[in-house]
Length: 407
Image 1 (tube, rainbow, N blue to C red):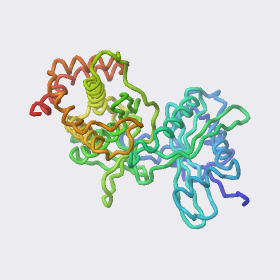
Image 2 (image 1 turned 135 degrees about the vertical axis):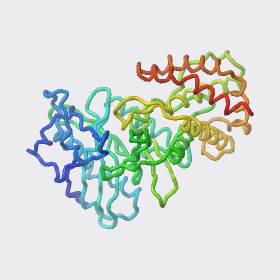
Image 3 (image 1 turned 90 degrees about the horizontal axis):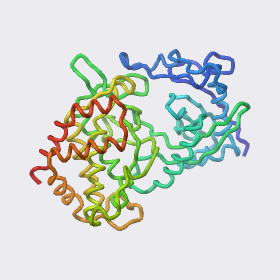
């Protein structure tokens, strides 16, 4: 079957398709196409919000679009068609494809692929792409990790992947992998308001919806649940790095659907730090590694940036309470065998959750503060994060001790 869909290129906030010869087409890809939502929460200015970092950069937005096009049509669009049919069986011929440059990240330039077929429309995929050496390396790593972790937790909270390839353009090389786009899910961040900081859920039309902290607690509880579900209790492997400010988690906060979250990226999966094999007895070592993971989780869950790119903020105590609740629930579900396979290891101990709660209750506030201070030497927070954590560490540890003191 001949593969000749109509292909268009677009940028959020730009009313017309981006075509060869247009100003956006000629812009260096190293420009930052930022979501300037710190005051208005509006996405409509994105096309005018480009600042150049390196005007001599050889890879333009147009080059990147053409590389993405070459990726989706390679081999008569076989990879794209297989991805689309996994979303909607018997979808028929692919009629149109829109390739939208959503944003610029530190390593990736994600594209939203909107596909209309003979029988279904629209269907959405994500095409993560990179053109720099760090990004090219990360593409390969992340594609491998997402494939390896597929099915580790059921239901899955990470994207399905459909394939990867490198595309050579005249000037240099781009790499892409095609994955699942979480339709209906949105980014969210803390935002300043006249009554203090609140959580804003960013809508697809560029506007945002403010929610209460009681409502937001459900989001953070589910994030802690997801990260702990993927934590390997036998080896200490965890998903890291991740950051709220990077928009790594997205939320479905629709009124007609249960609250849910997804993790859109997995950049690494390894133990937080090395531990001597003879440091603890096997059962105690499992709990000790889990303690390090858990304490680090409670700190990182409280770090965000206003509107994703602004000043660092330490999230309120309700986020800590939600984190503890979500993590303990995941441990309980892991012990009950409700999360799928556990990295092909032995089943989790049936008393995992109460045993861990009892274990952590034996630590004083001062001991917890000492452990967390050492943990920061492992994950190397930047100066702002370090200062923010130190300012709040005492009250943070007091709350943890109070939560577990009755165990």
